[in-house]
Structure formats: C-alpha cells, structure tokens
Image (cartoon, rainbow, N blue to C red):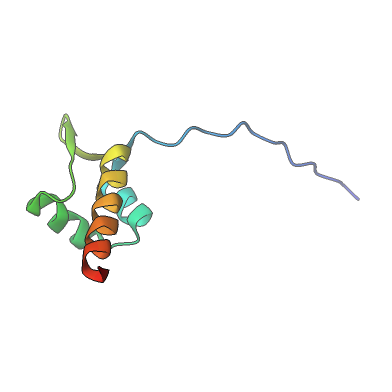
Length: 75
C-alpha cells in the first residue's frame, strides 16, 4: 500500500490580465456577451501584440457599474 502526501503549493497571485475567454468565466458570461461589452465600451481592455486582454481592474469596475445600476433601479 502506498501513501501519497499532498504537497501544498504556494498560493498563486490573482492574474492582472485575463484573456477574453477567462474574463467570461470570471464574470459568468458568454464570450459573445463579453465581446459585446467590449464593443459597447462597458468593459475596458488592453492590447499586447495581437492579444486582447481584460485587466482585473476592468472586471472590478464593470461589477461596480452593475451594482450602481442595480441600486439606481431599486431606489
């Protein structure tokens, strides 16, 4: 009988930039919806070479925008 021990790895820092597909996962949205948010200017992106990337700060800003809009509708 062999016993394997789990080796704890150090926690990885949160990513500073997300690929669009990863931002979609974080936001629980489809890639199509994320691209529409980018086109409409509601979700900020940056480019590195040919890659379109979503900064983590832009994800937080978008969530804050949704919360503000929800608060305005309820008031």
